[in-house]
Amino acid sequence: MLKQIFGKKKLKEDKLANIFVNTTLQAVEDGFPDIVGLIQDSPEFIVTPKIEANDDSKFILIVLAANLKEVPKHLDAHQDNRMINLVISKLCGVFDVSFDKLEGILRDYQSYLSRVNHPSNNNLYAMSKAIFFKYELGQYQEDYFRKMNAPNPLFLKRMDEAMKLFLFNWASAVKDYQIIS
Image 1 (cartoon, one colour):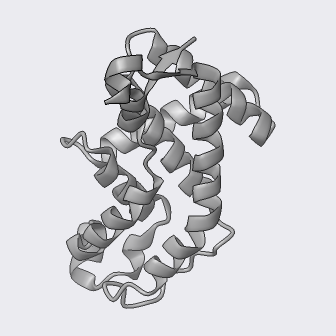
Image 2 (tube, rainbow, N blue to C red):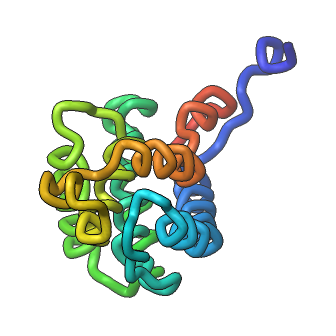
């Protein structure tokens, strides 16, 4: 009701980029050990996968790439590009890497997400499949799925539920705030 009377609260793009970077990095730092536990405890694997709680470099790139693929679905033209560039710029400082290099890596990961999940466009499913393939989990499955080089659907379903925690709620940000430059 108050939003209808006074309008949405304003939020600068730079502030939203900070919020996204900080919450995403914190979610990965806090949540990756749980993802490792989920993988290692999955009954679909006949051998416990060799993945360590500190081996999160692929995971963070998957999460960032998937989240940045969501931006154009929620922000207007040009504003989506500004937001993506702001996020990448902020991440460059965190990872101590050049803008061009990080942008290229994230684009490669976005392309990878699209390929492993073709023909679906669901980023959540793409994230789960990318984790499966990037961490080479197929070798730990029973023969049927290992020979097909495909993830067990039961594992993917469980992973999809966990990956929901790593998707930034761009829709809520747009609904609750007027995003300004």
